[in-house]
Structures are given as C-alpha cells and as structure tokens.
Amino acid sequence: MRKHADFVHLHTHSEYSLLDGACRIDDLVRLAAEYRMPALAITDHGNLFGVVEFYRKCRAAGIVPIIGCEMYMAPESRTKKERIPGMPDAGFHLVVLAKNLTGYKNLVKIATTAYLDGFYHRPRIDFELLGAHRDGLIATSACAKGEIAFYLDRDNPQRAEQTARRYLDLLGQENFYIEIQNHGLVFEDRLRPQLTALARKLGIGLVATNDCHYLQREHADAHDALLCIQTGKKLDDTDRMRYGTDQLYFKSPDEMTALFSELPEAVENTLKIAEACRLELDWGSKYLLPEFPLPHEYHDAGAYLADLARRGLAERYGQITPQLEERLAYELSVITRMGFSGYFLVCKDFIDHARLRGIPVGPGRGSAAGSLVSYVLGITNVDPIAYGLLFERFLNPERISMPDIDIDFSDRGRDEIIRYVIEKYGAESVCQIITFGTMAARGVVRDVAG
Image (cartoon, rainbow, N blue to C red):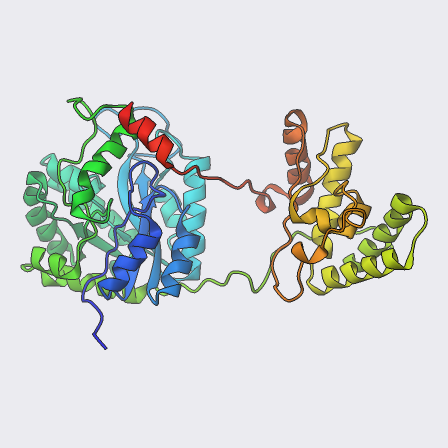
C-alpha cells in the first residue's frame, strides 16, 4: 500500500463559494483520494453550506474531513456598517478550522452571527466574536487579502506585527499560523519573505496553501467566466475582478512540495494541522426534536397522539371498521416506536393555528399523504384508504429516517405561521433552510453568451 501524501490542502473553495468556487465536492474528494491525501479541508467564503455533504463524502472515501471557513474580519467592529477609508469594505480574510466538536459548534455560531449581526457587503466577524468562541479552533492568516498581508503590502510592518500578535494572544501559539502562497504573482513573491520573517520573529508556524478555486489548471478560463457572471461583467472589460493567474487549482502534493522546497516546514505543517483536526460528527443516530407542551392530564406524547388520532378517526369516517382500527394501531405503534409522536403533534398544532386564523393550508403531498394518522389529525386532507396509499413509503420501521411532511401555506399567511412557531418554541429552536439552484446547461449557455 502506498503511503499517504506529505501535503494536505487547507484552503479550498467548493461550489458553495457561490459563483467563485468551481470545485464540485465529488471531484474534490476524488482527486484528494487519487493524490493519497490523508485529509482535506473545505473553506468556503463566509459560509458552511457545503460541510455536511463534504464531511460525508470525505468519510466515505477514507479521507479525514476538516471543516472550515474563509471568514471576513471587520476592520474594526462587525456592528460598524459604514465605509472606513483605506480599508476593504468586506473586511479581511481569515481561514478558521474546527479541531473538534467544540470547535465545530463555535464555527457554526461565528458564521451565523456574521450573517445576523455583521453583514456589510459580506458576513463579517471581529475579534470580540472570535475571542468569545475560540475554543477548538485553528486560524490561519489567509491569502493576500488577509489582514497581516494587507499591512505588509502597504509598507506597514509595525501594524502587521501588531495584528499577528493579537491573533497569537487570542488563539495561542498552537492554534494560529501564517499562510504563505505561490500562485506565480509578483505581489506574493514580495510578501512571502516578509511573512516568513514575521512568523519566525514571533515564533508562529508557517503553513503553505494553494487558494484552490478550480480543479485543473485548464479550468482557469471557465472560472474567469464564472467571476464575470458573479460581477455582471464581460471577459473583455478592463475594470473587472480577475485573479490574474491560472494557478488557483487543486495542485498535487508533489507540486506543492516543489513550490515550497525552500520552506519544507510550511508543507509539513499542513499535516500537523490535519492531525490536530479530528472532528467527529454523528448524524442520524439521535434526533433532537422540539418537545410539544402536553395538556396537564397527559404525561406521554404517544398517549396524547393516540387519543387525538382516535377522535379524528371517528370524525373523518363515522363508521370505524376493523380495517381502519388495524391500520391506525399499526401506524401509531410505528410512530411511537420510532420516537416521532411529538413531531406529529407539532405539525398538527401549527396547522390547526393556520386554519383558526383563516390561512389556507394545502391538502398534503408527497409520501405523507400515505399516512392515516396524518389524515385523521388534519395534517393532510387526502384519504390514504380510499386511494390505496402505503404508509411504508412515509415511515418504514426497517429504515429509520425522519418523517418528511410537506405542508403548503398561503403566501399571505406564511410569515404568521413562522412567527407562531418561533414564539411557541423559541427563536433558538427554529430555523429556515436554504435551497440552491444549480447552473444547468441552458442557464450556463445564457449567462456565458449574454
């Protein structure tokens, strides 16, 4: 068996760096496996959208997933949302990686707060936020848009050193590194010796990275077109965003070792960081569901659900046949055994509230329409018995997974239902999911040709 590679990519942008990253996660993981990399990091711009997919696919390929984010550090405070002359509006770049579960939770908290409190051009953080949630994190100084490089490039070594010391004091010597990069750019050649000298002066580790935005070198032109789509520019515009290099690809370990042959410790430190990042996530073995507030006479969600279902059965059908009794008992036993009684009560509750407020509710769609319990509770309005619909398509005791009830509300009342749920269960227990539109062939042709 071949030994593992001596380099790990720690600065990598997937397609979730929207309209900037052109590395599909499947392809990233495949190429990392081909290069025998023991680990791989994901560090998308300002978000953690791709981490679940990335984590699972790395694990499946036998690669240690390193969850991170290239964050935007506000020049002063994340709450100061106004232009500061001479400073980048979106803030400075900073790569932050999770070492463990504590670090992952802190990373999620920081990224969320960046959107909710710090958004100004980009989701921004600051030293206060990073300091409050620093446990379990490793940070690196990022690319030329990082704060230390910013000051060095503007002939202000004192401010660069002050910034480096601030990160060092905040995170500790084992958890802060100065990044060096080599994409064949003149300003990087000028910065590398300065960054190296500063790191050695302060005893900070160096780490070599490649700012990966696409997989192969020959993808550079396609990525340039992607940037034009993002910024609404044309390829021949002279005043547009461009990287000016075709080196932002997923380089092999041999390429990276050769690039930094004079600084081998910077390559070795990629493995050191990878060894320190051992995040274990467990999805699916335990569900964290809201606890439905039961009437005082009930002490068990399953018993309350069963009583409501039997009342609903009588209301829906009038005459209760043995077939209906058997089907209802079976469904209730599966729901109770799988621990989803409270889930059904939660759904029934906000649907009842919608109808009470005169907000139109859809009849139900998808596999939930096959549930008699859903029908008799009023969650759906499709009779599964009349149409011969199968409950097992919705919940199957042989394949434990969350029930998925798609519920449609009128646009005019949807916000009220969301407010009701937030007020009942607390803002910390309610979130809205995001959906992503992919650039299919027709859209790509339109955007590129336009």
